[in-house]
Length: 472
Image 1 (tube, helix red, strand yellow):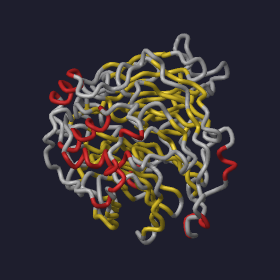
Image 2: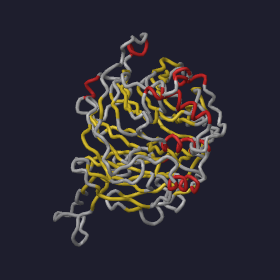
Image 3: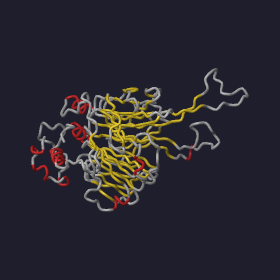
Image 4: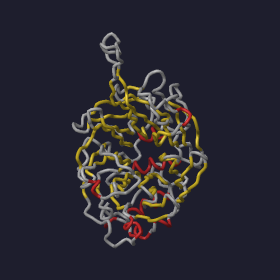
């Protein structure tokens, strides 16, 4: 559609005046879309811009972002832009590809092609030899593991029966006994020092309502029921988070050098579901076919999209138009951040908690007080994901861009100058011709949506993604 073809009324609809209620569309051509959704799309057409947030323009919608392998730095302090040097980002795109870009320049470094549906989630890990590996999940119900140097797909993991929505990688230290007659002592009779190596495990979650546990050495689910599917959620699972928590009742002897018995605390997996719950799973005891859920949190009214556990706090976002902080010790919500629409993404950065969602803006809040410090405008569609590197926030959106914003105190407190955060839009490499965009109203995706018994929020999410990636 050209600018001359656009109805002039598009530019006269303020987004904050659009009715977001789920009224049903009378337009048969708009699958799973309400009249309010169509009005919102029309308003967005008048908001299109690529000059804010140094927009990196992509050929399809950005569904997820994660940082590439770099030296890990604490989020207790926000450091400078030097952290962007050599830093990379991995993007999950609706155009059936994953992409590696430079965080500093926005230039595409590698493109990973092979999925037959939108790529919904990306995660990375580093092997014993220092090799970077990318893990991708997709609407095609599969998970792929990639060598990020050669772009080779090392394995395709199949086990879920619906869209893969969440991935998280667990790093473990393993011990290896010396081979040959089972001898664990040297010639002097002293016990041999056991060899150690770094191993990795993957947890994945899906719209099928299950969690699976994979061995990234064999690329197979763990045996004996540990691989799952772990069942508990009655609807789709949207996010996963691994944590290590203090467990004073299971402290080990400080002199015990056997790996796995040091005082590291206890590991748990948290899952966020479309059934409005967050579940806490004991990894060590999750050997049964159903896993081992030790607690169910029910402090949201509807779909939970994201969950982050930091210390003794759970941060979560939801379609109930809130982000909430829950104290793990009291099991009570002690902070509630209200929004005008669904909250889809969240990040923690020192004294700030940052949220984004369907209202397009990015909101920066004080962790200490819950006060809104700054609302950042620039995206013209849902803010789907975000990651913080140093003092820079990167946000990904269904508007087909990744944008960067300063989290330096002077930039958050001071009034925004007219040209602040403006820059030249960087166009990424075009999508390969053999990776088509999601077809609007395609029978294949319609059948998949119906079979997964989607909630209303999930149907609307599906409608957003099924729009053409070239509508801008």
